[in-house]
Length: 165
Image (cartoon, rainbow, N blue to C red; front, side, top):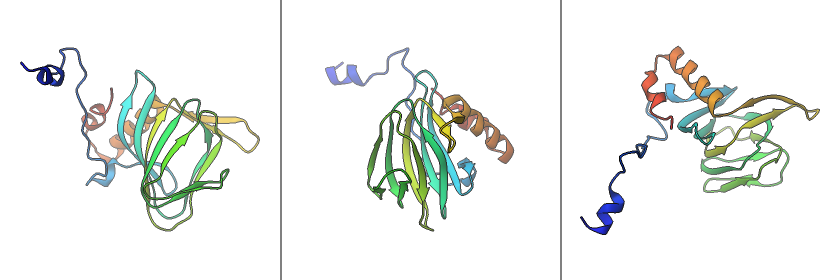
């Protein structure tokens, strides 16, 4: 066996690779999160407490004011958005790094669709106008949201289970 083949071979205790159609043909795979806001789960890493999803906003929409205890990475696939607390606009092709602790409110002003890939490490901690925590989402609450939505719309639970690592 060549050296390259040795590195390419799967180890017996290695977790399976994951290949997912990001923007699905079946709209039921988009999980509602807020008015005009949905997410499409791509992977849930329960060991490290992180997840990857596509966030989709149709028409104008707002994702509640929040912060993260760990970094978040994003890449805009379609449309544009901004944070109320910052002066920049994320447009198609933009890469975004959100440092831990940054407080922000994601807003889509445009009537067109926005889709952004997010890799969330840790949690989303929702904060009210007074600076108090009013809720959170983590990898486990996101899985539960998906499971409940998939059950309600008749999506096979195995599609969700396949995303969990």
